[in-house]
Image: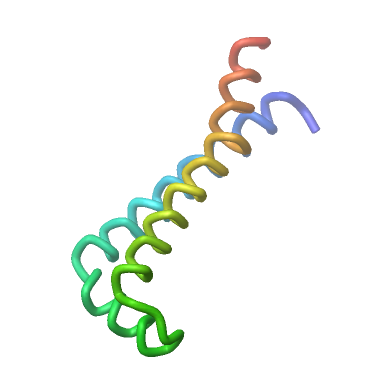
Length: 80
C-alpha cells in the first residue's frame, strides 16, 4: 500500500466518521427527550442516565476518530 493511498484512506475515513458523529449529534440534539424516554423504558434506567451515556459515547467516539484517523493523517502529511 502506498503512502498516498493510505493518506486518501485516512482522509475519507475521517470525513465519513465526522459526518456520522455530526449526524448522531443533531439527532440527539433535536430528539433527545424521545430517545431518552425510549431507551429508559427498554433498559429500565433513568432518562438522565440515558442522556449521559449517549453523551459519553459521542465523546468516546470522537476520541477514537482522533486517535485512529486524524493523528495518523497529520503524521503522514508531516513526514511526506
